[in-house]
Length: 316
Ligand SMILES: *Cc1c(COP(=O)(O)O)cnc(C)c1O
Image 1 (spheres, rainbow, N blue to C red):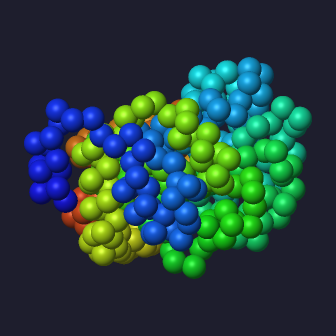
Image 2 (image 1 turned 45 degrees about the vertical axis):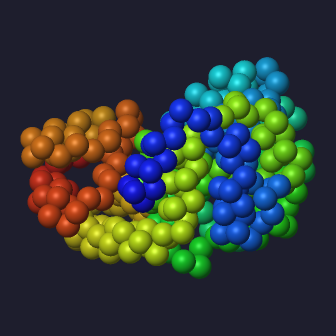
C-alpha cells in the first residue's frame, strides 16, 4: 500500500483521471454493480455533500437519526436544506416509526447511518425494509455504511436494498477500515440518474491520483483489511464484556468503538478519568462518550481506568 502511494507520488505534477474509471470499475466489481452506478468523491462526506446539493432546494428537509454523524446537519444546512433530527430509541438505534413520521412533502433525503456513529448500533433488516416501503419514491434513502466492514456478517444486505428500490443509495468510504482517511476517497452506489448527476456535478479532479491508486490497492488487499478488522471485532467483544460486567450500559456495537450514554456530569467525569490516564476519547455534549477501540493493552487501561460503574455515582 505504502509502495503504491510512494510510487504515485512521483507523478504528482499530473492531473488525476477525472472520471476515476479504474477505481470505479474496481468498486463496481467488488459490489456487483455496474460502473455507471458508482460515483466517487473526496471522502463519502464529499459525496454526501454533492447528493444534498443536487437534490435539495432552499427549505427542503433532510431527515436523519440523532445522535448520529455530526456532518449531517452541517451538510444539510450548507445545501440550504433544513436538517430534521429524529431522536434515537432507548436502545440507541434508529427510531424508524418516528423517522417515517418526520417525512413531509418537503423531505428530499433521508439518511440511515448503519452502524450508527457514535452509538455503534446497526439497523435490522426487517425494520429497514418496512421503513423504506413507507418512504415515497421521490425521497432518496441514503444508507451510510462508513463502518460496515466492522459489522457482523449476515447483517443488512444494503446491495439488495439498492437493487430492489429505485430510491436507495449506499455510501461507503476508504477512511475507516481501509485506513485511508488522509487521502480523502469515498463513494456512492446509486442508480444511474443519481450517479450520473453526481458525476456531472462533481468538482473536477476531486479525487487525487494517489487516492485512486491507494483505494484500488486497498480493495485488492482486502484480505489484510479483514485481518485488522477481526482483531478489532475481537477486542470489541472482549472490552464490551468487561465493561458490562463492571456495570456499564453499552449497546452492542457493530463498529470500531463503544458508546456510553451519559449526561454532562457523568460524561465529564469519564473524560477526566481517562484523560488522567493519558487516554483520549470523544465526548458529546448532553449525550455521552465514544470510546474507539485500540490495541489490547490500551483497551485494558481504559477498562481499568473506568472501573466499576457505581464509583461514578448517578447520571446527572
Ligand atoms: C467517517 C464517516 C464518514 C465519512 O468519512 P470520509 O472520510 O468523508 O469518507 C461518513 N459517515 C460516517 C457515519 C462516518 O463516521
